[in-house]
Length: 90
Image (tube, rainbow, N blue to C red; front, top):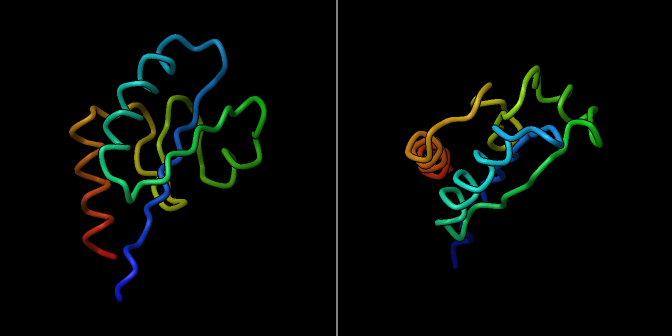
């Protein structure tokens, strides 16, 4: 039996940021199309250490498997493509 790898997608946002709120819904919907995605939302005001660890300097930002991939909100197709690339690499 082969275990399928789960890909961790961290969405970094700032509370009260309207751009973050819009991006969050679109990106969450795009990311969770795959059952292999673990979607994690991180408010940088409540968890600044994680944002610093990953290298987030502005929001919204997206990390995949602990690596900052998008320093600003990607489009849904860009995010899906990055997730699919990560899954393909195993």
